[in-house]
Length: 241
Image (cartoon, rainbow, N blue to C red; front, side):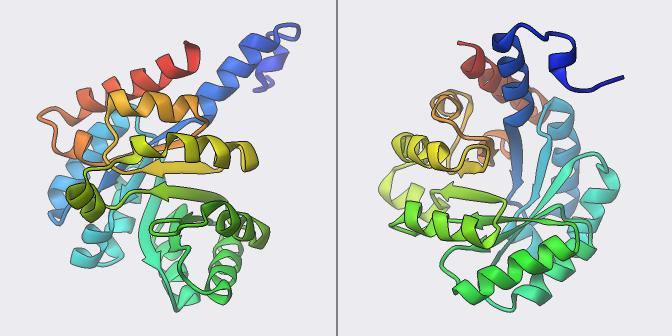
């Protein structure tokens, strides 16, 4: 049986557009933890709650190595596993070890050289993996993003780092206008991260973000599964309102 929604609703473009939008906005839980058992437990709960992308956060990878990627993939085989390597050099080595341990997506810093970006992308694609370019601390995100996409990057991430959130009191919610501009230029490729909760997710989805990355609002919640469901619901409400 065909999986294309147009088969069932051939004359209703609104329904087709809506269903495709729901399918194309992903919720990513960022496991920025150092306790591997806690991370895996939360990952399973978040996945049940609607987080289809599961991120092995940088602190988790640095604490336990790339084996944590393998562990997450083994426990949640149907989830898209993101390895937040934040690669800035030695791209072929870092991307390879992440991909070989089960990563579906690997992050590379936009601050790295064009040679590193290109090598990361080529290596990932050779291994059946995708690259998300993290635009954290980049001023000219449109120009840098355009070059990354030209090189073959699969996703671009607009990211307000934790230290910036704490010191300057800003979150990804402050990036709504930037998300809107980037999403128009690179539809389906924009991820956004930084202090996002259910309320802050809505304007980002409406602005065109395709991947909503959530850390603290899920991993610090008393009930991570329920917290994830609430954010997933907010995403769906943003798409239908």
